[in-house]
Image 1 (cartoon, one colour):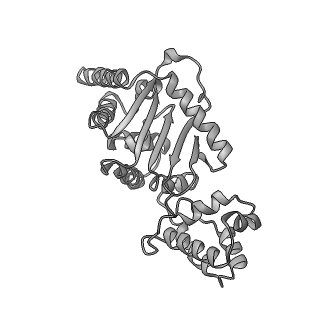
Image 2 (cartoon, helix red, strand yellow; image 1 turned 90 degrees about the vertical axis):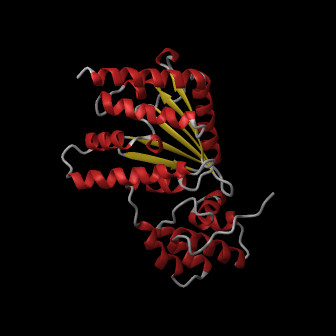
Image 3 (cartoon, one colour; image 1 turned 45 degrees about the horizontal axis):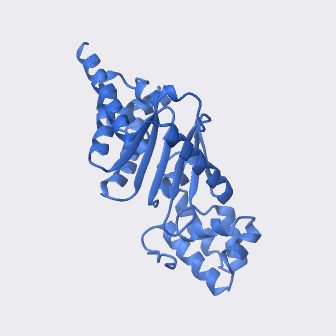
Length: 280
């Protein structure tokens, strides 16, 4: 089994803290589980901090300084991690997403952020914030498109999305925006960059009716599950809980139509939107 990945401490504040935490823990002769005990967190959580998957919080930094005799190192450097272009409820998940090698997502209402076209993202944010000034919407769209640059790499992360049929049928931004958005998703599928399936209305009830689900796997840290809600989100690392949501995703996949049928449906609906837009 390969050892822990060597983090480049100069690459980011998170990498710096992770590398230093691992160094000081090993120097103190503590296992990840032993270091986690005073903080009431699991050894897996400590591993995720060390690998840069999770963000260190200030109360954790204070405890690490105390337990490891770090003379305030973690508190001083933890502040740099507080800056994020994402909402508080999603910031840690977005940062973990950037380190994931595999992302599996069930989207019940909207095209997933990583797959959104610019016009679609703009329409979504305008619905969320109808009275926001244009520059604020511009910043949100720019952050979302920057996230999507993860897919510029030809192989990683491997992204597998299951879209509820409602994602295709809900007209966000009008027919022209929807046509472009669905053609964008179809193009990524045709380029063999992503895997997409559609969960049709005809499937009836299914295992993920409670909301959106994202699963993330990493080369050197335990997997995470992210549950998406209205202006809220939950990032989960408990192995038993993550395993439960992995089963949920598998059940959703089992109810979805094939990849070929999904692509054909996405393209067909996109063309319908295109024809509708041309009538007006």
